[in-house]
Length: 230
Image 1 (cartoon, helix red, strand yellow):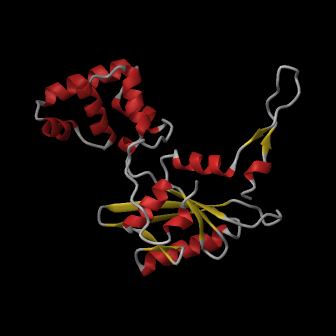
Image 2: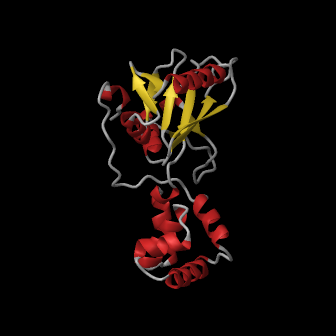
């Protein structure tokens, strides 16, 4: 499965019309995973973590709702661990499963997806995709704001909207009148060409999931090298 250097994409052609061979190395593939603003883990049939990208390692190290013990994916409670194990077992039988974990204001969704077919010769494995915690953490949102030419205050208002804040909450946070925030919302909608806040947020939610370059990733307290790559 991970022999990526042997995998080629032959959809392109050179100037002579012949097909070209593009080879993706293992290291390149792992770096691609690290640039996506979703935690991702690859699990083998024994439940061992074959790879965890930066955000997955960060989530595991925090131990809020999931953790790693003995290089295995577990929940922070026996109930969560049971849900995770059931989803993994189903995924290795070819089914896709969604697990939603929450305690108080902490919430995390995990999508379990089989990466191989029972009739295929490669070793079975499962991709676990973690939910993104907040759209405002997506670097593409700030890139979107820069592209639209938003002022710093308008960008800050956009971040508030992405966090689900109401006009009154954003005004209180900024220490200004609600009318000021409504005026800024109107301006940023006009700059984005969006007829409503709902349409604007829909556009934001469909932006590419880009990891902020300066995000601090907490190192794994144990077996850190097992999740690292060159």
